Image 1 (cartoon, rainbow, N blue to C red):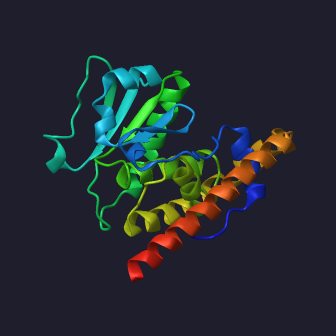
Image 2 (image 1 turned 180 degrees about the vertical axis):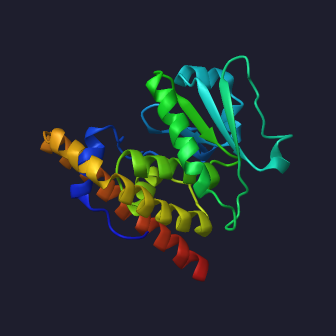
Amino acid sequence: MGAPLRWDQLDEAIRRGLLPPDCDWIYTKKREAQEIVPGVFLGPFGAAKDAERLQQLGVTHILIVRAPTEARIIKEKFPERFRYQVLEVHDNSFQNIIKHFGPARDLIKSVLAQRGKILVHGTAGMSRSAALIVAYVMEEFQLTFDMAHHYVLTRRHCITINEGFKNQLREYEMLYRGAGAAQRSQQAAQQAGHCPTHHTSLKRQYAEFLKYHAETVAQEQAQLRV
């Protein structure tokens, strides 16, 4: 599960819109899109084929994350209803995905600035697209990789980012933190007020979820050894 969450570092992120953990997760939800932060959804290709549901959710833009060889299958299904962007990314540990973090972040921020909503998807919505979302959450909410990864996991429990992508996310954490330290300090000083009761409630939910998830993983591993 990585390093433990530092709740003191979550205060600013909670104020800016982190959502409570999805404590009602069931296996079939992996086929749907989940809202990770307000206006930003992560899901599988199957979710991108349900235009009516996407419109109910208010989705206006779709970011497709696919390999060139997948283009014949994973493609723009409803260009007349949604605005599409495509990033070509292979799902393997040797793929350079870090170069896509910035463009994906800029697209998401642009969509939200227009009061739109965006779905990010690959094939299963578990590795490539999940890595892009973790990078966005990490930078936008000023979280460590471990904290951002844990958080996205509480919203879409089935993500399984490959180790190569995880290593690049850790590298990206160092890059963005080094570039924006002064600006973050200034923003933190300007946004000093918060609601302790609300924060404590969300922190408790995250802690309870992570404990439950760790116990579940341990039980599954024990069953595999039997």
